[in-house]
Amino acid sequence: MPLDRNTIEQLAAHLESAELEARDVTKITDDYPQMDWADAYDIQDEIRRRKEARGHKTVGLKAGLTSFAKMKQMGVEVPCFGFVSDYMARPDGGEIRTSELIHPKVEAEICIVTKAPLRGPGCHVGAVMAAIDFVIPAVEIIDSRYRDFKFDLKSVIADNTSASRFVIGGRSRNVEELDLRTLGVVLEKNGQIMAMAAGAAVLGHPAAAVAMMANHLGARGQEIPAGSFIMTGGVTEAIAVQAGDSVNVRFQDLGSVSMRFI
Image (cartoon, rainbow, N blue to C red):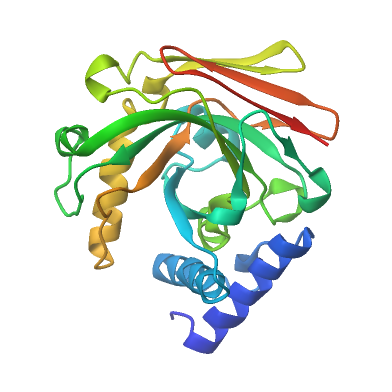
């Protein structure tokens, strides 16, 4: 039986407070095992509404658990989708305060900005490629609000797919100049290579994640508007970081993205 509106609002407040106060909680399906997929996204939508009501802008969409490495790492088989807000952005080469986070991890992301709307059902990689204005690299700092980073897929969807911080850097390129499937990525922490991957790690092609997102939103009566910034999902597995760490990610043909954790 789906959750009622009051419960959805309470769970959204519970999870968002955990994010803003940097404290962990147990996964919500422990207490609400009956919640379904629609409930999970309704909780996420309520978190988004709460942020926007306080004046924060939603500045992008994100796909989560899209790489086969990440799915295996987290024990799930289906991607999920969320959003990022303006206050989550940090400048390239800037500092990220670990005191504002619980247990952060970093992952490299191939991102796109759209020039045309995308809507499902029936959205496919070709439609996504035709709608891309440009490609740009980023690093996402994920930070699950769940204790020990342990959750199921419904719980992480409700928690806005662990969205926390993100850093855009490098340089933008036209999609025609790139092969997103073979685009290589090297993630370094403190000068040591921690992970290497190529764009095909994201569902075989980063645009596939965007097509799945458009189809998911279409089923909920929504679309991806023109001009949207979309993080297609972690190319590499997520790497834990702590205060004192420096991260630099090199993207083939797109430059690099770096940050320091303090």
